[in-house]
Image 1: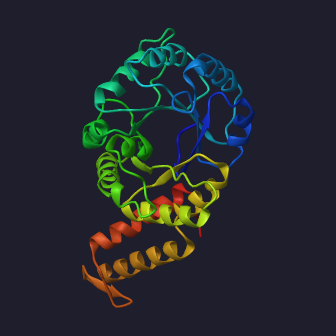
Image 2: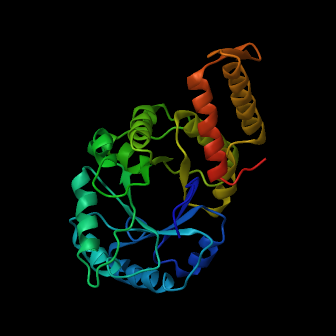
Image 3: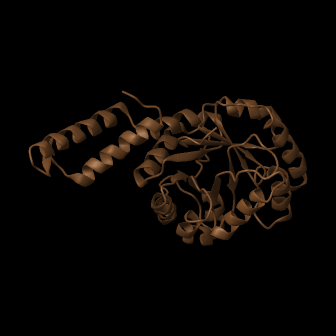
Length: 289
């Protein structure tokens, strides 16, 4: 299936075959079958086999992605050898990306497979200082990059700082990823919120991410999916206001004016462009009012 909106991306460990179907039924826009951090080193061959077998069953409900191990590692090479000739998934997630070269190496592996197959979309996960600093170059890789993910746990570990609910320690990294993604028309996907039981704090974190320009968020528990989907979907009030802005501007333009006011706020072309983009996002998310 083609990748649609990626408001919620739910990760499931590749060894947890008992959770595969449940993850697919959780309502997420995409499920990532994880072969990397969610799998112990001695279990990676087993995870690889379980995921490949599960993906042989067609399922059109939810996009299915596979997180490979890092490029250039023995496990990453094994992942590429198998999944460059396998099917049943819609994109690959590539961890620890620090340059476009990693993405292009994966693309070449798929292009050189026998029989030849189309190179799938590649979703880089930026989770190191070098990766965040090179976000723009990664976004401009010579492959389809529909989204860029921020990995805050690895990043803050490298920086030797704790993650906080306020998230100030991630402000630069978040902004860097958002701008890089926007520069190529990709979706920026915010880092996971690790307090599984605190849905109110999750909602605040999602709202903060959306305000910065993220289009979705990573999830590690199905209970987070409904909150993430709701926050990253335009509300009925937002859609109605966007339409009012566009209508007011078009009425002014029909009268020969390029600027107008609505509810005592100035309406000019950038404001209208923002309103149009919100309506496009609402349509992608299936919000039709």
